[in-house]
Image (cartoon, rainbow, N blue to C red; front, side, top):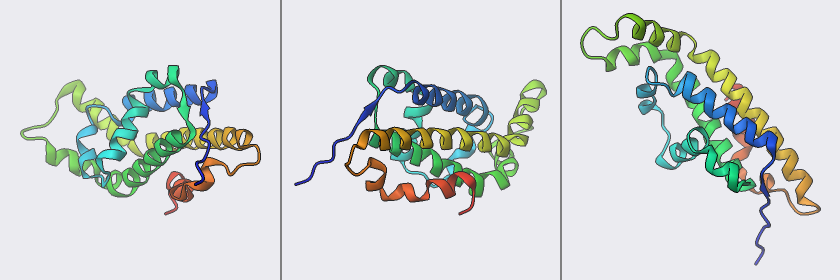
Length: 171
């Protein structure tokens, strides 16, 4: 029985990218003004847990490092989020958020901040996609360098074939 050797990385560029992804997601996408609308996205609990492990719990991995297969799973979940947020959420985000609010909706600064979050949602998804793509490319580089004659981890994970299309929005 073949058991693949899964490399672990504490690569500083990977860790910095994960931190940047988390910061960007929390500030610009998963903020209190937009987060409620995420409930329409067709992601399962496993996907949300993987996304949360990148966007909220990256400190744990800073000390432990990432196994490449775990990192690829997180990249795929983020790419899936980006794809569905672009296709299922962004076109109707304003309407969805207005349906969630009961009463007159946010006032003053909260209204301005919510409108900014909605108006910049697509652009912020693009930034997130660029960061995730950069993380994916770096992970593939590390994977190729560490495989030393073995099949790289990414070659064993069929779902990764969709990552590029999800990130550029051509699905």
